[in-house]
Structure formats: C-alpha cells, structure tokens
Image (cartoon, rainbow, N blue to C red; front, side, top):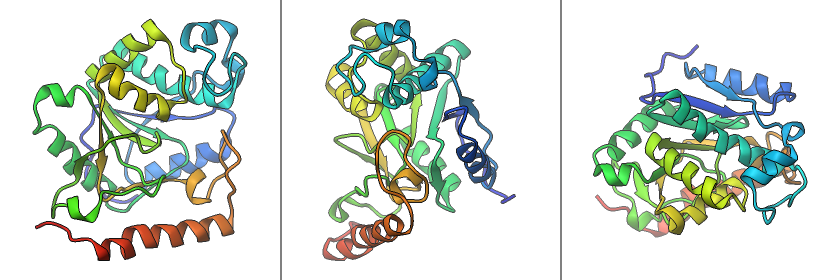
Amino acid sequence: MRMDLPINVDKIYVVHVSSDKHREEHIKRELGRFGISFEFMLKGDKSDISTEIITEYFTGDEVGGLSPSAQQSCTYKHLSIYEKMLVDGVQDALVFEDDVYLSENFNEVFNKTISELKSLPKEIQDKALVNFENSTLQIIHPSKQLEGKHLYKAEKSRCAGAYYLNKNLAQSITDYRIKYKCNKIIDWYHNELISAIQLQHYWCHPPVVEQGSHNGRIQSMIDDKKYGYIRQFTWKISRLYKHKIRPLFGNRKK
C-alpha cells in the first residue's frame, strides 16, 4: 500500500452494482492504493427499482421513463447517498462511481482543493458541488488558470464520477427532489439544480480522476460507449491535445 496523506472528508461513498464483481475488485484495488476507506452504495440496483421507487423519485421524463433502467438505478443510488448523509449525520462526503482511476497525487490535490473551498463564505460552501474528474476532457481555460490554485468556479457539471458536497447541499437536493421529483440522469440533474436551488459547480484543476467507462478501460453499464485498446488510444490522444498542446496557446496567470 502507498503511504498517502489521509483525505480530509467525513465519508467516502462508492456507487456500485452489487452483482458486478469485476468493478468491485477494481475499486477496492484502486482506492486501496491510496489508503482510502469507503462505503458501497448497494441500494438501488436495477432489479430493486420498483414501481413505488419510480413513482416516488422520478417524473417519468428521464431516460428510461417509467420502466426500470440502468440510468435510473445510477441516479437513485446518488440520491440515496444524499439521504444517507442526512440520516447518518455525515458532515461532508466524497462520492465516487466504481470505475474511477485516481492520479498519483489525488490525496494531496483533494485536500488542497477542499481547503480552498473552506476558505470561501459558508453560504458558498453550502451550495458547492466540487468535481474532480476528467471524464469529459473539459479543463479550465489556460487564461484563467492561476499558479498553485486548484478550485475554479464552473458553469456546469463534469459528469458524476468523483465529486464532493456537504450535508447542507445534500439537504437542499433532497428537499428539491421530494417536492419536484427527478427528471434527468444524475449529472444532468446536477445542472438543473443550478437554477433550481442555486447549486454552484466547481472544478478541480488539474483534474485527478478519470472514469474507466470514458477512457476505454472499463465497459460502461449505462450506455454503449466503446471500450478497449482503440478507445484508450483515442482518449489518450484527445487528452494530450486538450491538456498539453492546447494550453501552449493560452497564458496561465501568475
């Protein structure tokens, strides 16, 4: 096991389908490398999504409609994590999906990013969802990057494979879901919450997490993204261009 700094968060959850042993082995191995203890969110597998759950949580407009779907299952698991935070008195949490790969400096960058967040006014912290992943290959424009800074205000979500929130945001999301139900898959739902509850998206830069279902190393469970060597190669080329080559044409601020 690597000797890493402990990460400064009350709880870590992993969204996981209980029957997927390959992903179970992967996430235990990957987070174990960083000394990260976590709790699986197993509630809400596709086979668990009953008519009652759909009626209580979803409008029927989201992907899958009124029939159980992998998208509904994934979204329900995330929503259930927010509820569990409230029931268990968790102050803040880091949420992973089970196909993530972490950068070697994840613990250090995570701690620095959250330290920057906690220097902001409390009302901002209570609306902030901080994304740590690279899955859309979107980065902070070089002209906006500041040396030594990790936390940047963003206009939208960057998937839902690795993010941080505190109990007050979990409460706000849960209250809104109870009143209006959910009508989108979870990352799109996070975008809806910008206007609905004034959720504020923040991105960590440089990003320190990738999802295997995006970079081609693990097959997606909710869509038909290709995986394998070709996908991995094209992902690496795109990442090289967006993270290394394109920034050469922008100026990072000192």
